[in-house]
Image (cartoon, rainbow, N blue to C red; front, side, top):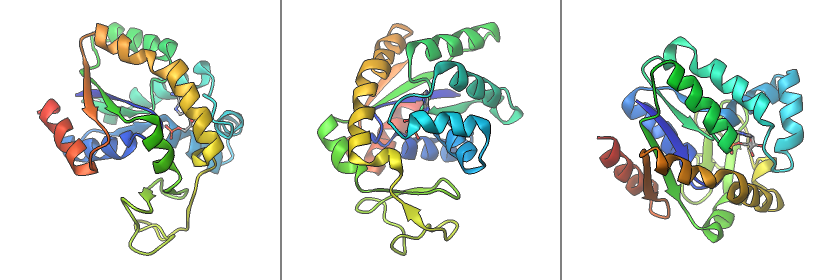
Length: 213
Ligand code: AMP
């Protein structure tokens, strides 16, 4: 099963993607996580990506497409995957579509987690992330057991630079201009499914499992 998660930054698609990955036993592939891992390890790719990420801008398609295609070509992705944060532009979607078509394959579902901008801005300021293991929390909705500390690995939690208010506003702008057109792209392909992302995490997941079966 090959699934794409669509939705504005902060719509909760990352959390849902992880839950889908767990339930359906497919890898969770997040281009944002791959970039952050590269930044942490000080790679050339990481340094290049950071310039864009810190401003809330998209990393150029050439860089992003390459890391994504390399990742989904790995063995664990043979039976499917859930893509979180990719594609984010029409050219990215076209490259993925072409690569899959060449393999006689296709995306099964593109799930749009729909949340209005006002809710997003409120939510993002409460987000906390663990830069060591990639776990994410929310001070109100998914608090860690101990304030400021990652449940999974014990590292300190931070408000990511790209979750700060100014950056969030830029990211929403970028989302509306560059990513929202993907809703039409996948509607035309007949695989788009909408879920109301303003409901609780459990309710959103319930709606998604009803779609995926
Ligand atoms: P995320 O964790 O998915 O919200 O991604 C964090 C940041 O990484 C984004 O704001 C972008 O700067 C960059 N990024 C992640 N995925 C992509 C993508 N598919 N295309 C371009 N930039 C991306």
